[in-house]
Amino acid sequence: MYTINDLYDLEHTLAADYLKGFTYPWEALKGIKDMIIALGATLGDEYEEREPQVWVHKTAKVFPSAYLGAPCIIGPNTEVRHGAFVRGSALVGADCVVGNSVELKNVILFDHVQVPHYNYVGDSILGYYSHMGAGSITSNVKSDKKLVIVHNGTEQIETGIKKFGAMLGDHVEVGCNSVCNPGTVIGRYSNVYPTSCVRGVVPENSIFKNSGEIIHKEDR
Image (cartoon, rainbow, N blue to C red; front, side, top):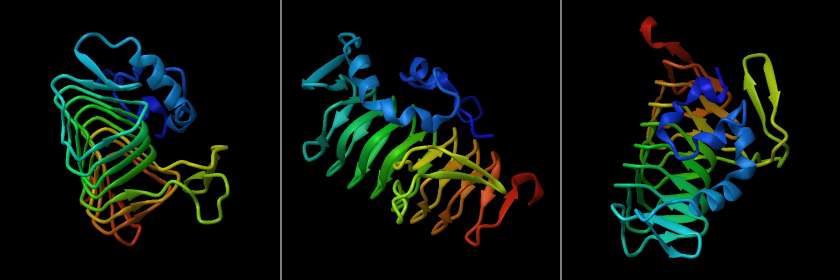
């Protein structure tokens, strides 16, 4: 329930060929920067290289106060709104919203992703049509600075990496002011209640409640 094929429809990202080289999505985090640099060099005339290694589609709208750090790719019809801070190593797909005061760092955003208000997204992959409510963030480093482990019930999956935010599957909804702790994996079509503190694996088509209770949608 936490492989790339379980979580994502690769038809909706320019990173498809890159992601096909891995089994688990967190394995792709270390190479995002190099992947964007290589991919950017292959983009056609529909993209403008506004600064070295900053490629923006001609139909994208980047507000004057937004910052785009290299390397990054901003896809077709995407809006990068006032005060957004793209620190770098960010692949943002088509029809996305990167909103006011949002910070992105070492991420892949599939098409139609919305991070519209006061979100921090670092060392994470957000699937097709996923949405993070206002103020929700991905926490990408453990407080003890140890390597991140993905917890799935009694199963513990060692990732071997220190910085790992969240893997959101396609059509995931994260409620306002929620925190996705390091190593969070949320399956497709699942919802997270507002103000939740999420960790571990949330199965697809589930609802994560504030207390950490998870229910299958058909069981409501």
